[in-house]
Image (cartoon, rainbow, N blue to C red):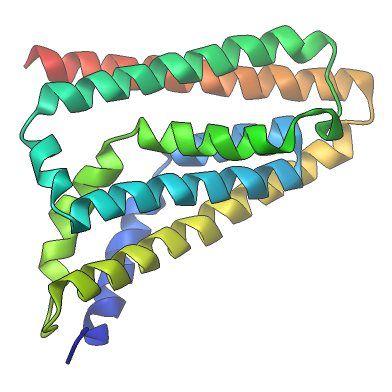
Length: 210
């Protein structure tokens, strides 16, 4: 068989166990939903899916192995991502007093941010490198098998994290019309970005010191 779909139940179980614990993408989606609403969450998760697709493609083509052999490069990318999240947090807090309506925010920005947040999280690529080879099964075409598995992973994250972002966006639509409520949501979103940046930077620094 070209691809082996019999491995999918076990593979999906691994994906769920990987996605359920809170992480950068989940926290980002919650913050986006609170700041920009449901539409922003949809655009952001599509950006995250695009970033994951880029990493999956790198792994499938063999580029991921080269990156894995240079951990300091991955650490540098991760710290860059932490810096970007910190910048998002600071700018979001600064806008908290004005609390702009979601429609006043450039639509493409949410998508672009989603891409950047994901591509500066190399752990996604490491996940692909570690897990995909274990689910080749009886597939004759490894490239096709890896492509199928990557698509399942990306689709799962889009559905799960996209749903979380949309639910957070529901809170935004409920409270954004009240000036104080909108301001509070922006402060919360900004705080999530800042805390996430600090945690990622701290974890990466500890790893680099080992």
